[in-house]
Structures are given as structure tokens and as C-alpha cells.
Image 1 (tube, helix red, strand yellow):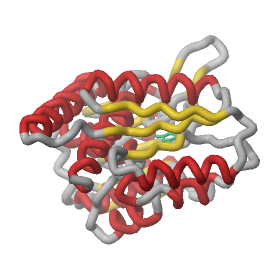
Image 2 (cartoon, helix red, strand yellow):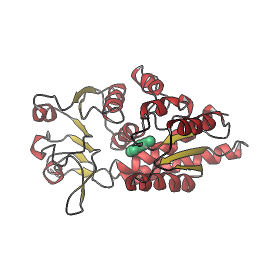
Image 3 (tube, rainbow, N blue to C red):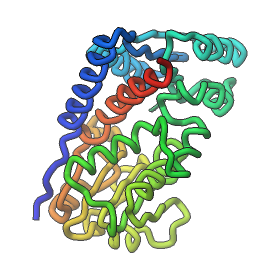
Length: 283
Ligand code: GUN
């Protein structure tokens, strides 16, 4: 069996189109375009690339992009002050503070300072708590994007065994809540899991988000499973790879995401959708 690739760029493009249509409807009804403020701190090259991508995608779909920039020496008080001003601004629908932040900043404090109804990253404990209670409002972008990818290949969820590898606050944990909400029987594996291979081998759906190339052996994959690789690792030779041995896994799985071009484009697409949804909360 050779797996069908799940084309994240194509699914993301369809989400962009939904957002464009939603904005056109708002404008036709006399409402303003949604606005997203992106706060970038310091000069981490990867963060600059990610934030530039978010800002240009905003412009492409019709969201007003409000860029905010700070040097790496910004104080906690300055950053919190900026979040407070954006929280109070009735023309701003979404606020995103790009992570990681420099060591003098308490990222948890900043994340929790963002008004929950402007938290388009879906990182605020209120939004994670709503998801845990099966009442999702603004949903964490990467897990939400993974669900969208799975729906694009008619994943039934109910009666299926899902294994999430990685228990991070921003991906693994909300991913498990999303899969549970969708109806899958869900297991979360992490660094203390006794036999990772045995857990993965039982899974109909494998979602891996760790950041270790080759962690998931291709031969662990159950024949006919669906593999979603959130990992994004740069090898010494410059190649970009996920966490799963792609070539072997591809010979066993029914569906698999490539890296790049799988989950990556979905995170930004769902951010756009969340910003449109946040705007509806502010009409
Ligand atoms: N850093 C890496 N990914 C993300 C993301 O999705 N949101 C934010 N705010 N920071 C990030």
C-alpha cells in the first residue's frame, strides 16, 4: 500500500477561501473587516518568518493586519501595556503574541493577559478549558488545523483509536481534546511512555508533535492508518523533515501528511478563520 498524501496547502487554500467569503459577507452587511494585531518581540529569525507569513496571509484574505514590533530588551510592563491597549481597542478582533519570548518576559502572564475573546491562537486557559468541556470557542490553531486535514479525507473518528505523541500545552494536549471531542478513543504518549512503538502500532490515527526526526519508526504504523506529522526539523544537510520516518510509513499508511506542505500551512489558515470568528464576537 502506498499512502495518499494529504495536501495541506490545498486544504489551507480552501480555508482561506471560506474566510474570504465570510469577510465579503461582513462587508456586504456593512460590517468592518476583521483586524489581527501580531506582536513580534526580538530578532529570532524563525519567528520573523512565521509572523511575516501571518501578516501577508491576512492581507491576502482581507483581514486588516496590525503589526507591532518590540526589541529583545522590551520589559514585561511595556509588553503587558501593549496587550492592554489592544484588548481595549474596539477595532481589534485578534491579538497574537509570537512565541518564544525573551527570558525576562513571563510568557504565561502575557498569554493570560490577552482577552479570551481576542485570543485567536487559542492558547488562553479559558479557551482550552472550553475545549475540555466540549464547548469550543476559539480553538488552538494547529490542533484545529489537524482536525480539518482529517475531515478532508473523511476520517470518521468515532470508533477509531487515536494516538497523540507529544503532550505540549500548545499542540499535544489541545490535540487530544480535539480528537476526544471528534469522537476518537484517544491516548496521549510522552517521554515517560513505556512502549511508544506498541502504542503507535494500535492507532488508526497517529498525530505526532515532538520535534525529533525519526522518532516514529515507519514499521510501527498499523497498515491503513492515517499519519499526521506536526514535526518540523531541519537536518544538517538542510532538508526539512517531520518526526516520522516518512518513506517507510508511507508504504503502510492509508493517508499521510508530507513535511513540508502538510500541517504547516493549516496553522496560519486556522488563525485566519479564528480571526473571522472573533470579529463576529465583537459586532
Ligand atoms: N510560535 C510558534 N508557533 C506559534 C503559534 O502558532 N503562535 C504563536 N503565538 N507563537 C508561535
